[in-house]
Length: 304
Image (cartoon, rainbow, N blue to C red; front, side, top):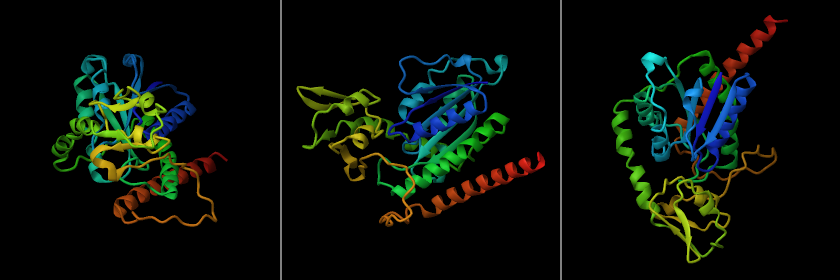
């Protein structure tokens, strides 16, 4: 099977998950092409048997550039040419029910173009805005995501559909919260750099929207911002101020490494934040992982 995986990653979380998908499909013998957005030329979608779309959740929606990209899918006649399957994977800092509505817009766009989203999965990964998760949290999130991806790929390959239940008024709420798309462009105009800036140009080079330029030796922000936080999160001098959301800024990459056994526990000021949602996510993940491991053990025993 030929698999196309297309993803947008702001600060690396979705890229890590996309990498796990690629490795897992390839380990199963499938041919995989992985494309990171933005891309200069849309892929030839018709050449692939299965397409994956990945993104970080923005205000309980797909980012504006991902929605726009989905509109580049080649139009096809599903009744005449058969079903073309698409799976969605997404990352977010919190596993709340509202995240289930984030793909409604792109599912609608793809359906009109002759594609069917059959599977959708969310992986909790550390925030790049709002607050900084602890190193222990980041490790646990990534360890859980890596364990879940093979199970989700197994669903996809076996043809088992997995879509989140549609919550009451979910479509309406997602539509309202899509105000983040124009809001990001407005807020982006208020981005600026502080005195820590050394004009290294990293933000200019890496901005996916080409929204940052150097004019007369000064960093200037335009009106195409996606609020992806790549510039502020990755700035080596912590110099980028993010407009109206300056109190939510997070700077610096996570290590995702397993904490040392004798390392002193980190203070966690946000231990109660979405506590029930995190517990539900990890409990469900552990149940799925344990069930898969037990199933594999039974298979191994039967083959002895």
